[in-house]
Image (cartoon, rainbow, N blue to C red):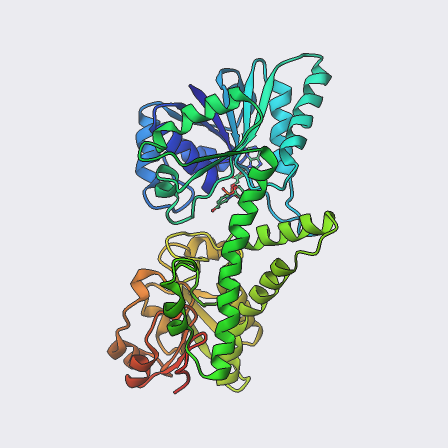
Length: 442
Ligand SMILES: NC(=O)c1ccc[n+]([C@@H]2O[C@H](COP(=O)([O-])OP(=O)(O)OC[C@H]3O[C@@H](n4cnc5c(N)ncnc54)[C@H](O)[C@@H]3O)[C@@H](O)[C@H]2O)c1
């Protein structure tokens, strides 16, 4: 079987590569010429563990090819997965222009039956718009060609995307034709060998399911952050509370870590998009409005602690930042809380030095030379007034207190992810500030 995956970002490149791994022929199409040129030379434009060798292996076996031309790729393909971006529009709604552009191209160039599957996160009703767009193009060409649309939202996590795709918790398929079901069952069968985890539903419910999943996860995070802020005020410790509730299987121990707010290319935009969908439908989605509001405030909580510790004077103070990506194991800094904190520090005249194992290049594209880039973890902290831990990469987990004591000007640690033990840090002579911790300060 030959398929096309349109959009070679985190979702498209991973999906295309994993599908090629099963033996189907995949053409990954993107309008970004430089991306396709790089991929054709074996250069992977994103950091995703395990992806590079898999791309190279499948390219070598001629099962995975890259192209900028939908027109040239279409004739041979039976299935087209749409995996282009759906960034937030000005009013919070998902911007569908890239998705519908792909639909237009399909309608302009298809010559026989196609199954068009949407993997991008899109609001309810988008598959209908895709169908109408394709039909309009076919009408313009005065041809009648059969096609089906389907919804197949993607649940992979950046940083573990390859494993998630190969061993999914579940695959959600929104369908309206038996033929689409047959084709997608065949494509996903290789990933289902250890259990049947395909959930079938109508297209609107499948589109909604993706938002429901991301909004639930965002809610867990904002809930814990809100409670963390209260813990500080009443003398409780959010880490103990987390352990106390996480062992209850009804609650679960994942996504209940307090911190500096959620970021990334999905949660912030998907929460906003669902709120907008609700508004358009004449409904107030109150829980999600609160989740969004709490998250915006949470991104400033650590900065406010810094400002208060230095009594409002950050001018020329030096801060060493560990971690820039919105979470570990990715170079994605879209909507990362680190950017909010760094911009605030710069606004107050502080000097900022940053270090991240993989996200420095992406950060440089956004912040340029407004910050300086550490050569390694500890280089970032020479003469620093404070250490800010913003992303919990494994390499930051154990502190070399002796070295820190020697190189830092002031022994102060702001732990935005609660990965250090306050009592231990304080015992080593450092001031410690976490999120919702009972022990804080000197
Ligand atoms: N990143 C994630 O973890 C994740 C997880 C699940 C779902 N999603 C959803 O999947 C979609 C893609 O996300 P992403 O993070 O992979 O995006 P991305 O921004 O990394 O990649 C999107 C790609 O689409 C390309 N593109 C745009 N218009 C195109 C066109 N007309 N033809 C061909 N290519 C085109 C862009 O050049 C870009 O390379 C979004 O809707 C997102 O919400 C993302």
